[in-house]
Length: 252
Image (cartoon, rainbow, N blue to C red):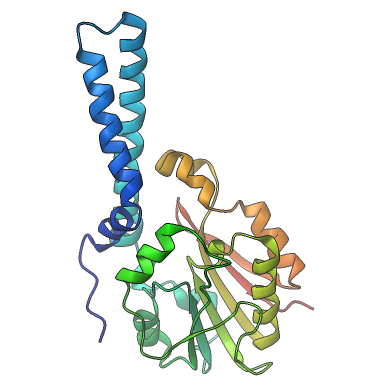
């Protein structure tokens, strides 16, 4: 059985999955600190070093602090908000992830057992090293099945709810994202819902993660993906200033 989340697990995971970036930041902080204090450093370089030091320190600390807030302190993983996304408790639901499953156990407490837990990771569609590190550290639900995003092993009209939490943005190409959501539309029952949870490429996430916010997708890109798959947004709300929840259905 998956252990309870610790009070700092979220922030520690972000550091572990992205440790080369944080290691680089530490080295940069040390170098900039030395440049800003060395008597031999020209004044204009010292000023630039101080500015660089402040910016690097800010984004390093902000990313950890916001990660702690979002993943450890907010309502996100309590899932008390999930019932606002569905009209009734789904009898048939599925959870999709990219190898790090942080939600199935908690969702099961709300919805009952899933009909499937699907891992949509492939090396071709998700080549980033941070995903590989997350997969090595994660503990997969024993029911997890590895699948292609374009071929979910579910019958048409067989699912009342599909949860896709911090996973779909890892499909970097628009075509693969659309393929996933086309499949989700196929497997949804008439009144079924897709619950999509993501960070966005927006001002709030830039303030938190700096250039790292480019890893996320804009709200416009999500709208294009969803529309291209023939789905419609029925609910759109912020879980925190940094996380967006989009609830989708088949449309007319």
